[in-house]
Length: 399
Image (tube, rainbow, N blue to C red):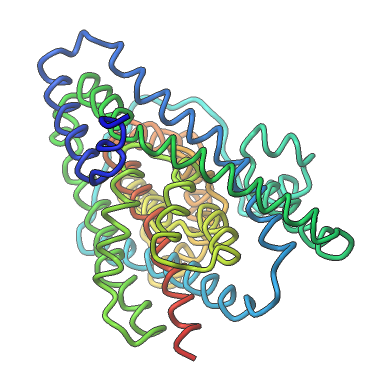
């Protein structure tokens, strides 16, 4: 018990960094020890398993016991989510114009993707009204949010205070389970890093180096310059201490899990640490995992323009502006799992008149560089969920 207490009381970030270094060393020196990678798969699976239950219970409890006053904060956080995602797409257009990239398109990737923006919204609306139990088992967060809000409103109208208290207690129980799972994050990170290094090595940085640099550069500019700017405009305060904390405690974990959905429990724990209102962040965090997709907007835009440069399609100012809007709306429908943004590239390419066969080759390239691209994308997407949630609440407190 003494050892366990010392483990839980030490810095989680420090433990994760130790796991990271150990994963790199083992991946380079003992790549044949594939069993180490099981630690990462178990950790991610546990987070993905508990996250839908956590979201559904917390949202229902928050809505059921809410006393009003959340409206302004929700308007602020949704505006920040959408504005930052559009800004990320515009940064990607500028970056791709200044540093045009061409791809080596050879093998056609297999798979299906939305052919038009209408398909994305059709899927969103269909997922929204999916059976609530099926939504939880399939981690369909649009459906989970919709039914949790509906059930929360119904409970608020007809349930007794005792029933609402039971629901609140259940939310606390699930939150405690999440804390237990997070304590094993260093072992999970060790396994995830080991798998990435042992399978891909460090060659991935040289084969598609320029493309990776452009993608990561656009994402970092959005995260380190634009997002703090939106936060400063909203609050009038220096945003960088908050940004650093979000990147350190949320982004680091999301980098290795590569899933915004799996990082929902991490973000909720961070919001609680920041002293935010649980009624607010229990809704805004899962909502952000669904629609706050800055990195996805960058990926869709950069990869689409790279295909255009490769096949010789000229993209003027107006088409580029419209492409940014399409990438923003498409990114809001991107799945909260690893690689979710890549299958929206053909949709954006179709806007420029580029065929699906060619576009799917870009998807294949995306999966090749995914060990870097998707990791950075998820880290920035997920940390921004907590960053903008805190920004919205700090703005509301200032009034």
